[in-house]
Image 1 (cartoon, rainbow, N blue to C red):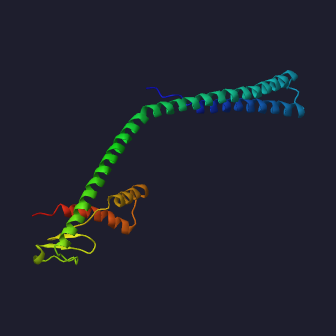
Image 2 (image 1 turned 135 degrees about the horizontal axis):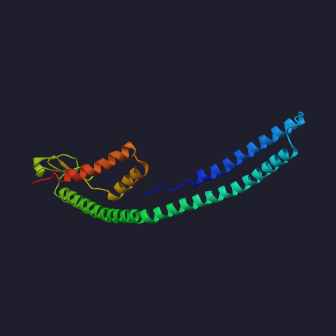
Image 3 (image 1 turned 45 degrees about the vertical axis):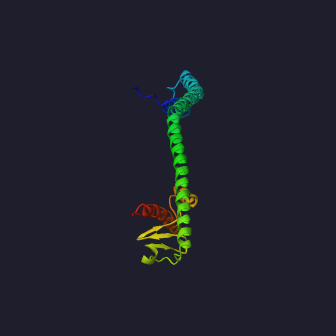
Length: 208
């Protein structure tokens, strides 16, 4: 595909060429006038007048060149804007569709995480209540006298080497979105996020 002409460069060249020609004509006129003033009889009136007319003409051409240059720059600006508009129309739909799909997936996944976390937390609280009702002390100690079960003062259930804890999904999401927005988490919050993953991982280790 042929490369589009650089209209800005073309515009600049039009003006530069016109100004260069005018400077050259001005220089020629100055030289003729100096020769006349120095007594050179070889310079005719017609030569001086012709040089003066040429200088004046070329100076007018500069004005026309600048007008033409502005027209070219405007053409270039509109061409670039048209290109930008075409790119927006070509790329925005895919960007929007991809983002919408991910937002819908994120929303669905977030709702499912909250649902699962709420169930797991409710189950944990229920198990703690049952254990306490069956005289398991909330000392965080596992004892054969309590069938290998323990309860902590924080409301955790201890089963063998597994600790089952409630999960605050909403706080977890708040921290995760903070991390997304800022690119980092303060150390205490980072520990909280990692702990949430550890809790889920530990739950999966519980076996009969």
